[in-house]
Amino acid sequence: MSKPRLSVVVTRRLPEQVEARMGELFDVTLRDSDSPMTRTQLADAMKHADILVPTITDVIDAGLIAQAGERLKLIANYGAGVDHIDVATARQRGILVSNTPGVLTDDTADMVMALILAVTRRIPEGLAIMQKGDWEGWSPRGLLGGRVGGRRLGIIGMGHIGQAVAKRAAAFGMQVHYHNRRRLHAGVEDALGARYWESLDQMVARMDVISINCPSTPSTFHLLNARRLKLLKPDAVVVNTARGDVIDENALTRMLRAGEIAGAGLDVYEGDVSNPRLRELDNVVLLPHMGSATREGRMEMGEKVIINIKTFDDGHRPPDLVIPSML
Image (cartoon, rainbow, N blue to C red; front, side):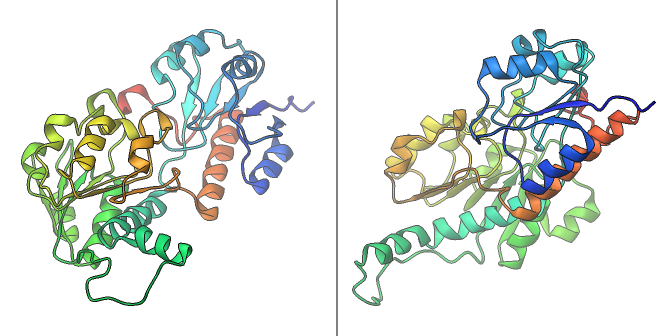
């Protein structure tokens, strides 16, 4: 007699191929709309499912985990970041947490370079002029931006994404610098042509561009706070494709409005909601959290989720198991 299929609840719409494959393997409950689940809906799903497949929009805190039913044994996150999940409390309840690391490295690094170019070369301003039909022809002084080659790039967080950014930046002729919890092996530094700064304060004070590529943890909350932002050069640019709460967004907004920082390119925001005051500024490029938005990346994320669930169902440790000590 074959064992019953796992009950899997998916909190958001996923690529059709991923949903179809899940339907073949599991007793899956899919969303009809692409809106996030309410807290009540999440609590109900966690009471009755064996597996929950949430996304970054689902805050799985201790309160929700306390309401989980005895059946829930795995939270298979669709995404690499797990700062929206109380992993420690889940483990205390005997609930494993997995994620989908590694598949979005190149996609996110590409977006970092896109934002650097967009801000320094004033691409959105040019696009807006063309779309409004206001272009009156080429001018020697029109929409002057800055050359990327030769600029000093300071990468905060030199994991897989940070290193991928470093490789791309070097190809554009940028000088690569970085700050990280742990210094990279000398061979890796040499291959990337990257200089390590133990002091984040000293690094940010000397950079032309800052790229944030570190995870969201208690130690990185407002890592770029008001004091540290004031160390930046007036012509510096800040790019964030990691997590919004790494920057004190209110302090950043004040400094951008006052001209104390030259510009910013943001794909993430505090509270996942863009600041209306930022939308008013010409020196800021805002994107709707599209760093991972490639068809290939979203498919690979789904494949990892399925592998994690299937491996768990076979009685083995999910390959992408998240352990609290890793965070």
